[in-house]
Length: 289
Length: 68
Image (tube, rainbow over all chains, first blue to last red; front, side):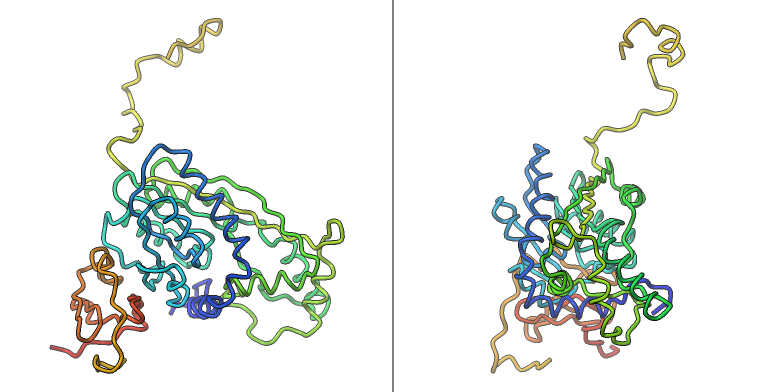
């Protein structure tokens, strides 16, 4: 394996294997983001018949099936895949095992952010989609856990004069739409919603992250046990609201379509029927385009 | 993995999976070896195990096929 990989995929698999037994304790947060994602299905009149749930942790597949959509599930962890119910497979998002044109909907709820080659994974998902199939993905965007990142970095700098990466690097919202476009999706859209999580006991935040399989899998992470006082020191310095510790989940929601013949297409250059210069020289008239 | 199918009955793999799965490395076809309960990619020289009805489509878990 190359040294330049950002994420340790074996650690990701191990974290998700372990989390298969605990993820139910954070089901409400995952169901909330899954709900926000699947709400987008109501914005289209399309009927979807066969979906792929990527890393839905046993939360997304039942919601899709409740909508009458035949749903296949995959996860890097076999145990986590089993939570979705059959048909399910263990699969690596960077080496997906699906034949072209297998699905008309792909849903990835908070599951693509530990992938090293995100453009490659998106391209493979596009190939697995039929023409005019829809990709719906939610990702934690830059700004997620910013309070924790700042608190940990400052606490560690105070205590040891240095800092190790303890919170995953997240993509910027601007990168998300560009990623979809680069992967060949039509009509790519990315928008963002901030979800504030309030914790009476900030240690619960760390427990919840672990329970969801979100423990640190950055390849360059400090593998030594952290100084015992580090987390207590950091958590105590996080911002509070009404006596509760605030942690932000900045949820980027990405939608893109596999190219299809019936989608709106840009015109060929030179085929416009109205002159822009004419429109600009007649400002008093409504442009009839 | 044991190839003895007499003692522990396999959880059957969902037949719909066999329609959509390809080898993750070559994207080529898979052959379902019912007796061994494996999905075989001849092009990659790998056999992917099926555990509790879940195909494990991960190269690191696959059995390397003997050279023909």
